[in-house]
Image 1 (tube, rainbow, N blue to C red):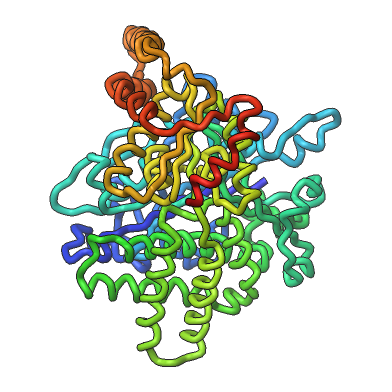
Image 2 (tube, helix red, strand yellow):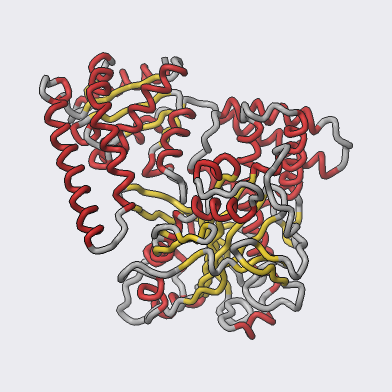
Length: 567
């Protein structure tokens, strides 16, 4: 198995008057003696093609930036490098186009297919991929290493490392400052397997029909691979390429890559490029909707860069391969979660962009872009419907799933973290953006939810946002009515205090061993904030019309929920 994990980044500084960005090295064609500060030398692949490098002709080795130093028993070398998988890290690299795009890519190779064929072996494809995604790493930011975090969560730290590396003048490790200038995009997986040694029936429903690949004995599939961090469920987009099991299709050693199958190589290049371009398209549309972008020069640069991206996406061919079905499949992978912008805002921005396009010279390529924008606008218009964000505690997941299913049958779009959380998404960002995007926020109220830090954050955010967006509906749905009891807050605060005491004891125990305990900080902060805000939350819940959904009451009262949402 050959795995590539890509983390694209969107650099907003390209649109700023004073970008505070180093001009050296000049990507994508830096000089051979250029270095990326804190990363290392710029390398060239202009020589005859060797190795799994796809098409990056200029890149920087990021081996020192992404550190697989391990955490006790749970690290790469013990979980994957040792038998039976014998996994190896093939590459860790960084590349930039010198404008908006930067990206990190990691490559791995292992013997998964051989292990799966072992008589009596019980294997899980998704479970195996999850071991890579959850592998603990440290990210080097400047000359410091971050705390341990799962590999799939490293995008936020990588953007800080990139910002620190490419900023001139004032230098800072402050995450808040890098957040203003660089956005992390959704990561993607590219997984190449030996078709002769894998049972591909599990992927049949997600097959991409591509005759030009089948002539070469290559099959392509796309799917979402689930994984879990703590109690949160996520999904990562994945392309799965199944090729013939010879050295030109599934190379292992460097010498094998000299005869690497050209069709397969171009397919890998195209899929990775399409993902970064779709990710950047989203970010550019969001940037155009940003109230801080007021300068006509800034807007013009955004339009030109968006035009470049859309020209690439609407090309009939790329690298001698037809790409229409690849682009359409990539957009279908995006249907899981539509992003943070309201559909109405996206439509308005596309209409403005189309009027800018109409002033350009009429060429076949520009006509392709205009057609693409018109098709996208029509698609968004067809999706215009009520959006509901369901806030719940994971102990109440069964009730949340039932509400989701009932609402979707009525044509309501539902945002639920267990189905909608994209890989690498910060939970705070997901909550805030989901609340802003939604027309209604449906809160599943229970003892579990009112003593949960995250649901408390969601409820506090909803109450705060409602002061500024009165058109948003807040619909509390009660699984129990214990919060109406006079002493409920006192009991709940005792439960929260008990958990805070546990976390403090764990922190003291770790500190006594000389170990870090930063993984407890977020939960402590959320619960401390909840204990302060809980009386206000309960006051608001008592003041709102709370709909009883306990037991059979969901069937009885569902029509009231639907009427309130659509009113």
